[in-house]
Image 1: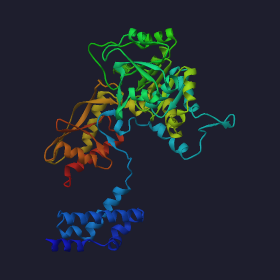
Image 2 (image 1 turned 90 degrees about the vertical axis):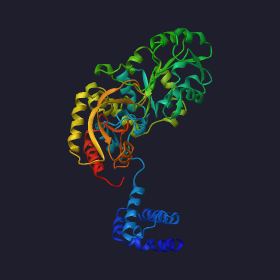
Image 3 (image 1 turned 90 degrees about the horizontal axis):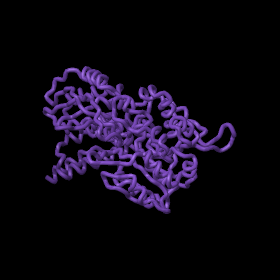
Image 4 (image 1 turned 135 degrees about the horizontal axis):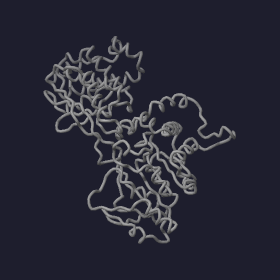
Length: 472
């Protein structure tokens, strides 16, 4: 046995012979030599390890052309970017793990002219001196929402943190127990509050909080009344919550500012499109809330950002906080946010052009036609590996927004034959580009709501290849 292993070790191709093969010589025109050498050494180390363990006992697998092909595959893997496009077939529109909102095409068109050149990021062109980066979105945010002032940081958790640090550090912030939410990545409102230096005062119970609960704890050390939108869950049944307008009236009576963390803030009334009513940013501000914060990359459909709107005096104080420099956004985020906001000047244009809004508001009939187009592209499959059909299903908004809302949709169902649903899911996830679906009741589901129109051909080709692939 030892003798056989020694013979196999001797069959492993030498580095210089691999470098002389036509395949690797040709590949070196596209890949740096250092990366190629890394791939070669990794493949050779793998082969040595496999022989030592006894899992490789076929000398044909050590042939020069076979090993060089392995090297090419490995160098391609090493050169592949870590962050790359995927096809979202899960049906979750604002998918946190898949990058949340997609940029509108008209926004993407603006990237190259500005990203590759100097800009007036913090330069006042009229006065010829240093300016503020916030002016690029400040006025349009005020225009769209009616807020007195506006600023932007890198996400909504940062927005809440800096507002509390500015206005309530070392003092008390009153919040309902039913609103102590945990958002993605185990970030919790109580933890954010603790990091800000504010002292949290919980009132009410998990399911019921009354206005008197807030009033009973107000004292000389109370700095803020905080309302947190329970965007990623809902309590139903025997419940009661304090209306924003009532909390504002209480705050006015005691001279205490009221802040509302909207989480997934939106500018569009979804009830007009037959969906669940979600309070818009404009409606919340109209009720007199002193500060409002929300995400730019969820229901708004823009880049990751935390938007702060409200009374000029308070926003200005937040803007002067030294934390602002650590939490500020860069020019590309500002660019994407500004041009996304400009689309909201015409709601019809926004719903048509902003992918998040378009997918959420897409009608069942449109999705039905889309599913049929995908099925036609796939065509008839002569395979025992799985069968394909189209069925009704349910999509989710995602991103912590509208958690109980299920959007009627049409889905492509890959029903197991020789392959299990999990084997098919893994294969599609390894496809280039990766296609991310979901498994339900041992059926692989591909939801057409979140598959973009220009991705239908890729999905169809992948399903065709899956039907004939043998190396799963």
